[in-house]
Amino acid sequence: MYENDKKIAYDDYIYVAKRDKNYLQGEVLMKETAIRKLQFIFKEIIFDMGISKGSVLDYCETLAIICFVFWARMVIHYLG
Image 1: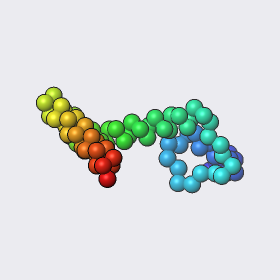
Image 2 (image 1 turned 30 degrees about the vertical axis):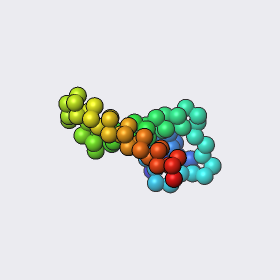
Image 3 (image 1 turned 90 degrees about the horizontal axis):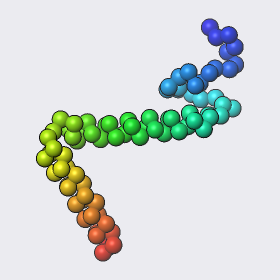
């Protein structure tokens, strides 16, 4: 199956079920993984909110609501 069953190149796989405990990820791979995760989260937020399907006015309304909710959260946090 593999040339050497003891050593698998995990860099060749995006998703793995079980990682080797002795395997150390490189710094570049860790940064790429973090960037991919952030991109995934932002894309999911955009798709869930429907921002990509709406108009500029819808986008501005959504942004205003987000800002207001964040502001209200901070006010409640500091008053409470």
